[in-house]
Amino acid sequence: ETVSIIGLGYIGLPTAAMFASRKKQVIGVDVSQHAVDTINQGKIHIVEPELDMIVSAAVSEGYLKAVTTPEQADAFLIAVPTPFLPCAEGEVPEPDLSYIEAASKAIAPVLKKGDLVILESTSPVGATEQMSAWLAEVRPDLRFPQDAGENTDINIAHCPERVLPGHVVRELVENDRVIGGMTPRCSERSIELYKTFVQGDCVVTNARTAEMAKLTENSSRDVQIAFANELSIICDKLDINVWELIALANRHPRVNILQPGPGVGGHCIAVDPWFIVSKTPEEAQMIHTARKVNDGKPQWVLNKVKMAVADFLQAHPEKTAREITIACYGLAFKPDIDDLRESPAMLITQKIEEFHNGRVIAVEPNIEVLPAKLNHVELVDYNMAAVEADIQVMLVDHKEFKEASVQTGIIIDTKGIW
Ligand code: SAJ
Image (cartoon, rainbow, N blue to C red; front, side):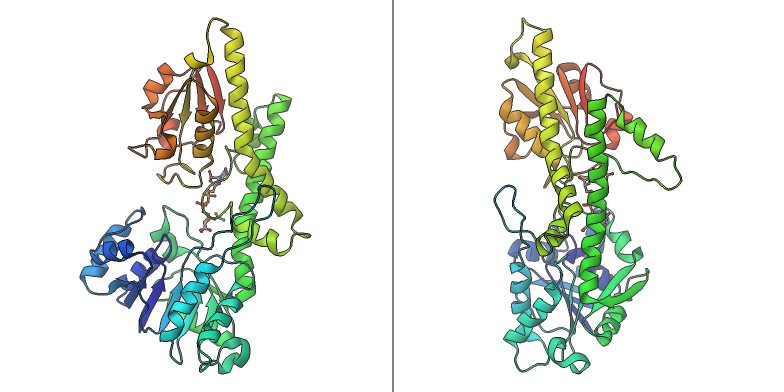
């Protein structure tokens, strides 16, 4: 049995590697020639612990190869991005299914009777049926579940990934899997396939529920973080330490509040709730509000920094803004990773650089060079920042910061570690 994975990114490549490590023949497909070449050399183009060894072994033993044009296989897993389309500020962004459409249309010509096609990308409700319709458009000679039910020639399912970046190799094996077949037989076929490496339970439902389950998981987290972020803003106004408050409330046996921060980053939690809001804008009130609360948090932090600068100048009338140094601690989108994309800490640092006339320095133990976007910011170490900065802005609770001495002076601590 040959498995083909379409999209060799943060989800597709580890999934391809897991199948290959269980001695399945795997054909990875990606539009990026660079990704394909890198993988065929046994190397990886993304950062994920342990993945490099698995890919290198799979390629050298001949179980994994990467190509840019799909080839025949028995099962196809689509793991391409589903971002949202750009929109004006204040509007609800719409999901962009063009990558799924392109992937479907690319594999359709090589499909044969009995094949299984699984959509793994996080998708708005209805996307799996849409994918099946795109396949049917290209292949009128084959029967699909929307028309043929269990007499289908092609089995189709939605099985969303739910692995945590940084722990993908372990979570792919251990996590339970939601299996949303368009028919019961489609689900059965998918379970057989995933059982190659999945040790968690494979729980069966239909495709629409599986789509909604994935969106619900991330929306649930977004709403809970929004609650914590709102509390932090309320407490600031009421002169209460929000960290102490949450620790106290969490002593209640049925309360478990998450941690506030500078905002919500990453590629999932700040995106997926919009797929619910855009589909049901009237009904999704709380999910929508949570998005607004979390997206508004970086601006709130920025205002705090501006006020701190004003206070500093008032206390030191002999100084000008040009002579003030601001230090930002952490740039990644969450602790202990090097991923700076979709990061509220990065956004805040960039905005500080834009408004502040003086020096801006940053401490980020997980990277060696600053991205070009921060061309006026200097990367320094923790101790140097401690000495040189007049205003200290804590943005990410990296382990190195939690272990270091506490900063004093004017501090804006969005993670409550000082
Ligand atoms: N954050 C807080 N406070 C908290 C927890 C997180 O502010 O108490 C922030 C983080 O700093 C970060 C953002 O939320 O900016 C998201 O981080 P995360 O660790 O919650 O999640 P991701 O984006 O790395 O991965 C999530 C996971 N989903 C859930 O935990 C429900 C993961 O299991 C999913 O597979 C992944 O999204 C995905 O691909 O959808």
